[in-house]
Image (cartoon, rainbow, N blue to C red; front, side, top):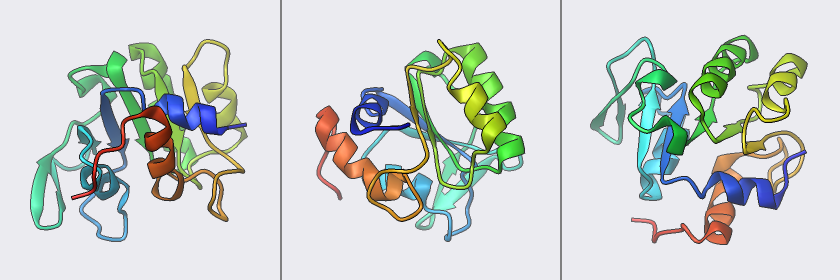
Length: 154
């Protein structure tokens, strides 16, 4: 089960990525990272860019397209069948931490994510401050503060 320590460890990476980022204003995980001044790359195989607040951000089609995968923690906002594929790639290229947003995981996802040695930190499931479990939108700021990486929100 995820803990404050796990969430804090996630935010020790210098780079971040959001798998499932889109221009849909109802999906604001990517915007949250931008609002907190974090170096974040949107991952979307179906679009070369996503728009947040009227500004376009270039995407990469998959985690292998990240410039520094071994130094990048990844938030995932995809359905469980897609999440399994994302985790397989993440493990293969050495992603250190993953944050599985509510709704992104099932038993198969958790089996893969929690496999010994797969990732340094996996944030998921019950807990956190929100009613749906660990969510970067609800729990991220405190975890960032605890990790010493909180910058003033712009």
